Image (cartoon, rainbow, N blue to C red):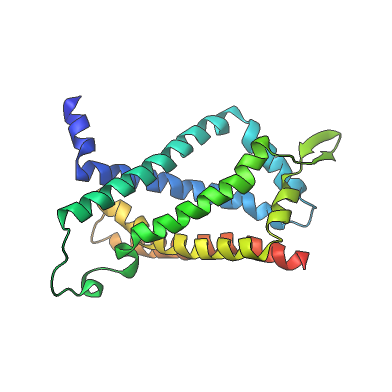
Amino acid sequence: MSWFTNAMSSTLGKKVIMALTGLFLVIFLVVHLSGNLQLLLDDDGKAFNVYARFMTSNPLIKTTSFILYASFLIHIIWAVILTINNKKARPVGYAKTKPSANSTWSSRNMGFLGTIVFIFLVIHLKNFWYVMHWGPITSVNYDGQEYRNLFATVEAVFSQWWYVALYVVSMIGLMFHLYHGFSSAFQTLGLNHVKYNPAIKFVGVAFAIIVPAMFAAIPIIIFLKTL
């Protein structure tokens, strides 16, 4: 297994791990968005609260969540390691460079964009994930069954303009992060091909715009409703 360890500890190996965890997190974004869109239903939060209970009680989902947490940590840690290694490899920039001629703005600022998303993630987990598991949440009754009213918690947080602004800015950061990361992951895994590259790029750009935009729309709509 030494060859595998050596391969995974190499720069290419780290990039492969980044690509795989990144694509897994892309799948998570789709699932998470489908659940969050239920916040916009005109049912006083019933669909969302039922969904939240299912996601926190289903054994398969709970097991998958541990893989998700590990993917987040590995993606972040490997990103930091690769950034540090890249800076060490070239501590002094070239005298004359034209970065825009060889790369996109998002590709040159993946570290910065990732930091924005990470800071948002910490605040987001504190406001929702932590409160959902250990915070004081009121209960609501549906058809004789008691559910935790996480919808009320979400509504309270999204009634704060500063958090909505932070959410929107973070989604813009996520958009640029996905813009480069999506196609880069396919390239790292060797799944790029002249015939399919245009389609991969189109899907990547569409995903990078549509998914963060839909995420950002949710707190904006809820905030406007609370005015």
